[in-house]
Each structure stands twice: as structure tokens, then as C-alpha cells.
Image (cartoon, rainbow, N blue to C red):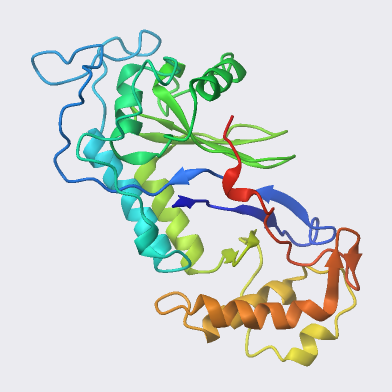
Length: 315
């Protein structure tokens, strides 16, 4: 399964409720992968070799002998836990991809055009990402495009970019890219046409994401761009259909977002969510509003994901 944390729309009151401000939160090509708890040695030995104490040599930029904070198994388990959480909301658990015990055999330093350090390739090979559809040219393009980027650790040290791997991509202004530092095990969030945020430990990042989904500050939709509504407050009491359909403002008001939350919770969100019936209710509400490329009666409504979403490269 190519599981995206999809493109999103940000709403803030009052500055950007109308017009809607588009983000990708974070548009990704992430693969959901599961392996056994014990990762077998790769068929092709990776360099640099591990010292006798089992640690890996680190970056010459920040720390010459830095040992990774988490092992590939421990890091992979955090990703798998988050992917599994998403299956309780909108993905089918049977779609999780399971690599062989030795990891994805196609992913070697050579096949990846040495676009990252051998240790970074070992990490993505083992559990995290399914890059098996990528060609050597894809990796070369990605490496060349980002070759001048700088990444700083949570301690303020310049990191070796070969230890920082892209795990999510975005498109258009104010979209986002996510980067994983495989040594410190931090995630960097970078805004297109904006700034890169401070790094966050991967455990903290995923726990925050879970909480945002549970509280519907992130609202995913079936074949729709995820709504990011952190600044939209909760509504007191029930919202009637007459209230929400009687609005004349451009779509994306607080009441619109609160009504979408209400529909989801009426259909079991988050513990026993029925995506199918909830999506039907959303479609029934939005269909009369129209909203093609030029917008409908209230402008652009909750937009749908591009038809080629899952085919998007992160290069």
C-alpha cells in the first residue's frame, strides 16, 4: 500500500478561512511495511562496517563517532505503529506491505545511486519505506535536487545530509516535506515557500499526529485532500443541516469544519469509524454545492485528491 498522509487545507480564523489556504500535510509517498522483529544481515555488506562495540560511525559534520539513537528495528517499529494506527481510521490493514526478512532486496547502495549513506539505506531497506519502484535515475534526481540543503540537529549541529532521508513530499506553495535524520531519529518539517521547522523526535512527531487525527484537527476524507483544522474550535451542541447549508460565505468556515467533524463522530470516529457511510454523508452534503475547477455556489468546497495521487514521485 502506498499510504499518504495527504495534502491538506489549513484554516485559521480569521485570516485564511476565505479563501482557503492549501497545504500538503504532508503529501507523501510512504509505504507501510512490516518485518520480523529480528532483521537479518543484508546480502550485500553495507559500509561503513560497525565497530566492535556494535555502534555505527557517524557524520564527519556533526559527530565523527555518533551512535544512532535508535536501531533500525526500533525506528521501524515507530513507523509501523503509526501506519497501523492509520488502518483504524481509513486504511485497510491488509494493504500493509511486508518486505522479506532481509529487507527489500532491490534497495542497495548501488541501486540507490549512493544517494544517502550506507547506514541510511540500510534503515529504509529494512522497514520504513518501499522505494522498490524507484529507478537509479529517480534516486540520482532526488540527490541532485537536494544536494545543497542543510539540516541541523536538535543540538544545533550541522548534520551530514547523507544521514537525512526524505519520507514525505508536498506540492505547490506552503506544502510540506518531511525528512528523517536516521542517526538522531528526528523528523524535520519543511514548508515550501517557507521555513524549515525545528527537528522533533520521531516518537513525539507520530504521537502528535495521532492526537491531531483523533481530535479531528486533521480530517482525512475518502479521495479528498485532508483538512488541517488545528485552529478551528469545537462547536457546542448539534449543528443542523439547515444551519450549515444556509451559509453564503465561501466554503471552509468554522461551521463547515465543525459539521464535518460532527458527521465523522456520528459514524464512530475514531474508535469504530465507518469510512464508507461517513463518506456518503459528506458527499450528500457537498454535492449540491457544486465546485469544479471554477468553484461552486460557495467557491471551492472540500477538494478531491488528484487522480494520480499515488503515482506521484518524491523526486
